[in-house]
Image (cartoon, rainbow, N blue to C red; front, side):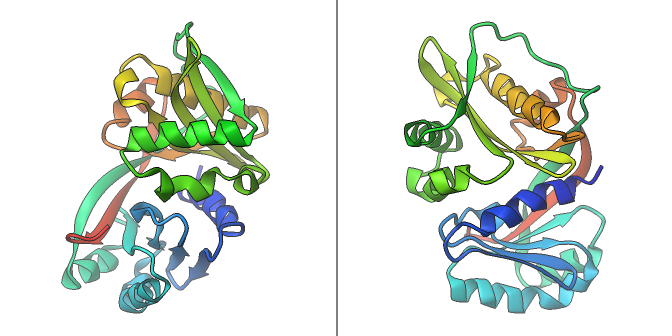
Length: 250
């Protein structure tokens, strides 16, 4: 069960369709740049080994030339030389995120009888999912709009979902099945609808569909707010990710 590979595979496929995007496996790290999807966590270096320590400055300059944010994503304890070099260069630990996984036998389905979870298959549905996601994450709609296009949604293995209660869109998630795993991304609940299990319901549907498509486990990176929710669904921490950024920059 390799959570890191499960998360990177979908990002590689995403880079194949987003304008100007780059996903390149290099010496000790993966370089990622998504000009049309400039979220902090997905742009920069995803580190595989300490070999990446000597490449931070050149990768940062390359991202600057493209115009994307630059962060360093490491797995805690695996690349101490990278973490030391990042601190020396002025980066700071910004966020710790559990890398979590669940197998079919471990998954626990919540009881949310009032929720209808649907797959998103139209441009209107994608726009609705985008609106819920942007509200839930507290980001501008334009920041994530490129990944809610019909072209992206047509990628093999990618499914978007909306949870609805009494006709209102209350939560959303995406599941991306690649080979033996399904990666769960963009789980968000409308701010005034939290605490009712809607995010859990839409997450579980994405996981179940991934299992039905042949995945042996589901993987995700959890926010601090979502960690307890995922644990109740049976997810367990397999990795601990640490994000380094330069203070004051996204």
